[in-house]
Length: 113
Length: 171
Image 1: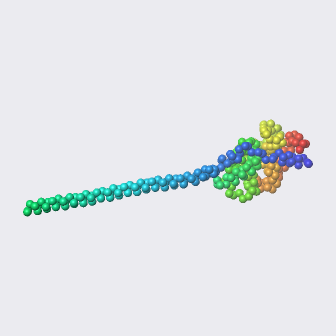
Image 2 (image 1 turned 45 degrees about the vertical axis):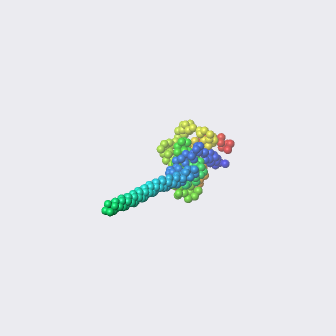
Image 3 (image 1 turned 30 degrees about the vertical axis):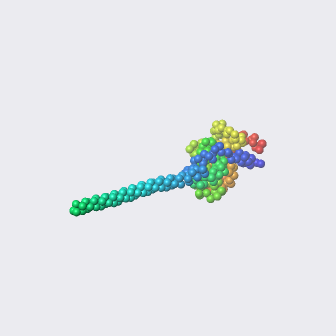
C-alpha cells in the first residue's frame, strides 16, 4: 500500500456516517408543516362529533315541532269545546224560549175563555 | 400531505445519519449541523412529490445538504493557510466525545481544508462517489473536482504525517 492509498484507506475508515443526536426524527416530525397526523382514536372521535351534532339538531327540531303540534291540537280541542258549549247554550235558550212561549200562549188562551 | 407522514418518517430514519454527517463534517459543530439536517428534511417534505426513486432521493439529499451546509458556513467563514495557523486552529478544535480517535482526527484534518476541497473529500470518501458524480452533484467541472481532490489529499497528507502515523502503522 503506497502513501496515497494509505491515506485514502484512513479517510474511508474515519468518515463512516455519524450517529444523529437522540430524538432527531421526533424533532423533524414536529416541525412538519400543515395538519399534524391524527392518531386513530382521535380519528374515530372526529367522525363521531359531526354525527352527534346532526343528531342533536334533529332531536331539537323534533321536540320543537312536537310541542308546536301539541299546542295546535290543544287550541283546536279548546275551540271545539267552546263551539259545542255555545251550541248547547243556544239549544237551551231556544227550548226555554219555547216553554215561555207555550206558557204565554196558554195563559192568553185561558184569559180569553 | 399528512398522508405521507408515515412513509416520510421512515425516510428520515433511513437517511438522517448520511445528512447529519455531511452537515457536521462541512460545518464542524453539532448544533448547526442538526439545524441544517432538520431544514434539509423539511425541504424534502415540501419537494416529496417530485422524488422519483431511491437513487434520486439520495442524490437530492446529498446535493441539498451540501448546499445548505456551505450556505451556513458562508455566514461564518474561516480559511486556514499557513502551517502555524493550522496548528493554532487544531489546538482550538475540541475532540468529539465518544467518537473514535481516528474519526476525530480525520474530521479535524477535514475541517482545516478550504470548504470546496472539504466537500469534495467528503463526497469522495464518506459517500464513495466517483469524481464524475461529485462534479454532477456540485455542478462543477470534472477537472475542478479532480484538482480539489489532489490538493486536498496533498494538504491532508502533509498535515497528517504526525497525527495519523500511528493509525497507518496499526491499520
